[in-house]
Length: 167
Image (cartoon, rainbow, N blue to C red; front, side, top):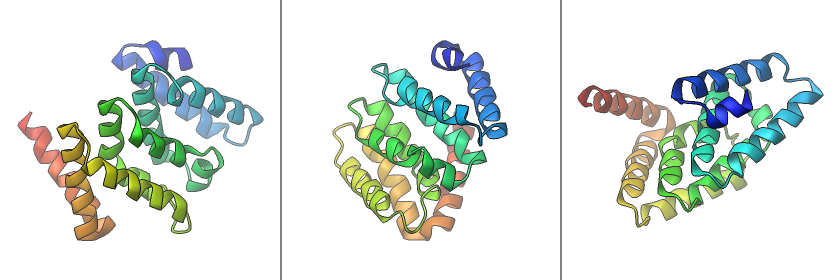
């Protein structure tokens, strides 16, 4: 499954990611889960290939739908995805900023160090030389800060729906 997630075509890749997450969800207590998570991190987060780092962000998002904050904390997933906000490849930074709402949702109030890191990363993104990166960050950050997390999330979803209709 990991090989298909890393090298498969879009549909195959999506199905492989979905299968992998379903497997982990059903076997999350297993010792094998720790090994699989280490492999996911090595294969995708630490990959020299930027496309695999994009897959890591997709895996993170899919896991956020099904796993607890405790699971994320146990496998250090929040810190890893926040680090990708400083990636040298603009598309990686953009993907992180597009998903800032999900990342923030996976942090507890007592995760102050990670919240500060996320805020620092967002603040640096405002000054990003790549315009598409800085614009995505500003829009989401502005909505979240101005409207609060819950209303900001709702507004971002509405804007995303409107944008997708135009395409």
